[in-house]
Length: 95
Image (cartoon, rainbow, N blue to C red):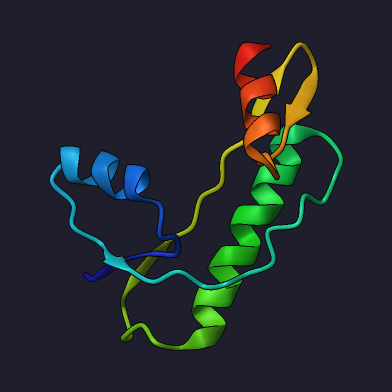
């Protein structure tokens, strides 16, 4: 079956390649706004948004598998969202 990765991150493609998979990269443009709440549930909600957007786009052939994932970093109980500026990125990395 064809594997579609609902994401364009190079690192995720590289991880899949390490186990012998070569997915078709199909980023969805899904809303990745942090939904709040417990980090595990929020990550699941974001991944589901991507998966649903991939299915709704209907670009995949019948029988294709869609892999949609998301990542969260939590440090000392605080969720580190994507930095908006280089200064924010530096502050996060030095924490």
